[in-house]
Image (cartoon, rainbow, N blue to C red):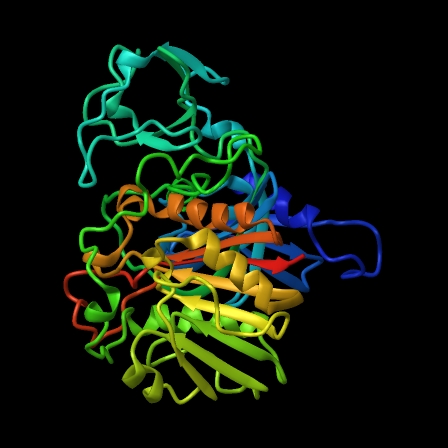
Amino acid sequence: MVAECLSAVVGNREPGLFDDSSWKYELRLYRGFQGNHVTVRYRGRFTVKLIDMNASVDIVFYLKWKSEGASHTEGYHASRVNMWRDLLPSSMRCELMGKEVGDQVTVTLDASRLLEQGVPAEPMRISRRQFAPRERLTGEVVPGEGRFYPKGVLHGVPGIFPGNIAPFRLTEPGNGYMEVDLNHPLAGRELILSAVVGKVEEKGEERGGTSTDWPAAVAGGPGMQARWRGRPTDYLSGTPFTREDESDDRLFYKKARFAQHLDRTALEVVEGIYDRHLSDGMAVLDLMAGPYSHIPEKWRLKEVVGLGMNRDELDRNRRLTDVKVHDLNREPALPLISGWFDAVICSVSVEYLTDPLAVFREVERVLRPGGIFIVTFSNRWFPPKAIGIWKELHEFERMGLVSEYFFRSGGFRKIRTWSMRGLPRPRGDKYYHAFPHSDPVYAVWGEKR
């Protein structure tokens, strides 16, 4: 490890750092009661710290990759990364040495490490009878092209055991047979992993313990939101938009709910997403609005129209300049003029739409060319009113479902998905002792063509 990290630092020194083109150094390994470290000394004047075996670091990882028609970024906050024990790409570990808070290191991951040993690189054909999932909450599972299912539902496939929850992809339903891809959802992708340095601490004396494979943790779930080789994912077969409670939504939303639906940290993440896309002078539509819009206060917007189900909630929202009470599930058409808005936002509500394609087409209509539609959500919702398929899907597949709304509505381009997981739950939150991590945030956005 010492030689690898020495080579990484020597090879990546800044041009012009020294007057001549030579790089002469002496390598010294110091051993002490607080751990080991290595230094490189240049002509007795400049010392660079390479490795501190006693470091514990908070790191925010960003995994970037592309699929057919979309770009993706996955954020993952890793607390107390053990630089000696935990698993990291060797080149990233080396480059992180000596970095300070706010510094960033970026490497390309070897996607081949996601190919499981003994698993065919291409989809394999199995009998339809070998796919036997149990009933879920919404009833019998209908095999959908491009959908993911836990491997444990397969029978008679070598290397797969009952209860295996690792995902596989159904690439072709077939007639009496089906083709399945048993590889990791990100296998074969070009993956760019960045690490942004946060808090750095001394971890103290260490006696045994476990290690964490951080690249595997970051890649746990991503990939499931992408289409299979550009083909539409079949989320719409069967009755995907039925709900437990099919009564009039106006009765359900008659009572105002002023509580926040996400913890404070997650709401700051949502606000940060909107912050990157909004600017002064914009006309914004807050779709399916409530008492809070999560728009940064710094932006001086031309107007913010709130369209929602409860008048009291909308009147409480200080960000809104105009309100419209409207039930999108009864009437998807928006009571708004075409081509007016610069941005439309929809916060933690898309899972309640029973005719989402019609609504997305209406959003495209009211946006100006180049305007942006941003949809954010998490893993919390009102179960009686959420559509059935939302509950069936893995959290990352839900980004795939929302992306499919963008694709199929036909009026959007530059589709992006974005996620953030692992942030610490704020102290004082009512779920602080039960759930150490903040609510995950998922987002999908696109521009009007």
